[in-house]
Image (cartoon, rainbow, N blue to C red):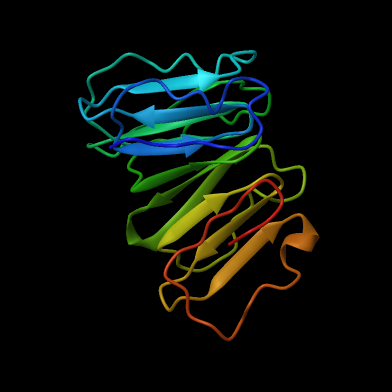
Length: 182
């Protein structure tokens, strides 16, 4: 239950509170953790209100930290976001969502029946989900990637996000960073 962070600590985003967490998410200038009691705590830069996690008792399942915002998903598949809403990344569509992923200025969620939906900035088409089924979605800086049921990764958004996408391999998970994908 203990986490460790390393790297750039300019905004104290790697200074972890002395507590136990069951989930952690590193954002652009902040980090958020989900405590066993269901509360979210964020640390680092609060310039855009990204540390102001709503105090609720929804029974939270996960937390996701983006560039200037963060989101949490509850047991009843609701998503709530806070921080900068400069591009509409906090305007969550109606539930249900099975997961949520916060990008730099956009957010994506996975709906039942393997459908992804994104909202917020679409400056590079990172919020324009292609047709198809996805079992996981990960929002990055100016791109988004989804994992298809057969293990193929599909990325959309900034054109260079497609460069080097392995097409003949089956993957179990996908994760986007600022400008890269794993």
